Amino acid sequence: MAGPSSQPQKLSLSPAPKRFKRNHPQKDLPYDVVEKIFSFLPIKKVVQLGTVSMRFRNSWFINRKLHFDEDFAKGRGREEIMWILNSVFRHHLGSKIDSFRLYFNHDGMESKAESWIRKSVKKGVEELDLDFRQGKEPFQIVSDLIDVESIRVLKLSFCELHLPLKPKGLCSLNTLVLRKMPASEGLIQTVFANCLLLENLELLHCSKVFHLKISTGKLKRFRELKVVECTDLSSIHISAPTLRSFFYHGYFSKLSFNGSLPQLKDVILCCPPARSCLEMVRTRNLLLNLVHVACLTVSSTFLEGLSQKYEKGDLRAMQFSLGNMKELHLIMDATSFCNPHDISSFIRNCPCIEKVFIDLNNFSFGCGYYWEFHAKKKFQEDSQPLKFEFLKYVKLKGFKFERPELELVRLFLEKAIILENLALITPKNRHMQFGHVDAQVYKHCFLTWRASPKAKIVLYEKDSSSIVPNHLKTWC
Image 1 (cartoon, rainbow, N blue to C red):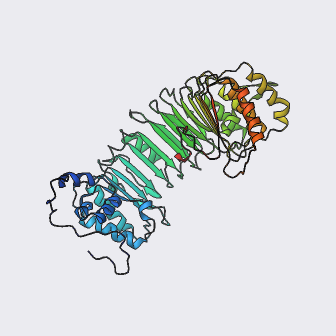
Image 2: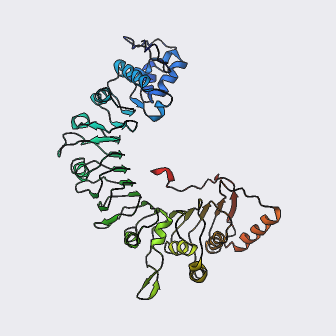
């Protein structure tokens, strides 16, 4: 099959044969078995293997994973991508397509993109991932294009989705991801009212999300909600007793829960510094709904909102207990005013904590007047009776050996009676050299502070520690 004369053919796509050859050595796997295996590989991998072995050069004709995503598009122009997709769909012999992923500049080629989508839908596609962020205007998706029963996973980037109030299909949908596109309240309500198998919803950098109402109603499987940088958002109301994971990144909105969340175990709350006292109040109210959480990732802003406040002339700390908490991942914001007392006060209310990760990054504890004349004394007083009875692992990333950081290290070493590992990772952008004398001084201090005789204290120049948090920072 000949492509455009000026177009470099980086993938060799041979014409579809009338029938596959089946004469193969007896020592090899049967041809039908090999073809079955190859049909489940991404098409890019299948074509690459076909260039190595003539036996497999036509395996892509029945391939089920048509992944023309961003990785596939690297180094290829739009004309080449169009030629490849046209060739693949023209000669595809398989009766089934499991997944179709497309990263494409649709400007002026909307009908072409729509034809590829329709062909994949016609062959019962279950995962549809459409990314049109290269275009100038959102890609318009009419309801009949995707309103089918086969789709289980739907991921849309820079699109406008138009669904009727009662879609005929999408009854099998369990994952919906909307990125950089309008996500109105009406659209969300339509999804929850009709997609009764929905388990995961992600709204990433979406617009027109003003009041997000998550009411699962008849949904019995809804598990995970992610909301990232939806700048129009002013309130979130969640009524989802089956919710297990809630990830939020952005300024604190008015967040309310209807009823308890007994299955909520994983939570990420990464927020910029509070813009008002109201946001701090919202932080304190939110904490009451985290009593069942086992793994928590928060920014230092969250801890600031929980710090001691003056009430009727007295400085009082908030009373709470997170008895199910096993892992805390704290991400320090360079512009926050969080101090060691804020950190120790929070951890002391997690009596069963086992792992603590603190990303200091470029953060330095700005311990000024408040710390020196008040918080430091409270930090020392509150630390006296404190014991971390279950704490086994601590990692401080971006450790600069500053005095407040050493105060935290001492706290963990003295109070974690069964500590197994303390990892200190120095900053990437900081040239640090410790002489023999300096190393001996710190080693002596750390060993003197250590309450657990089996605790290993390791200093890394780069993060090569095998202990990693459950929540990766790249989740959004």
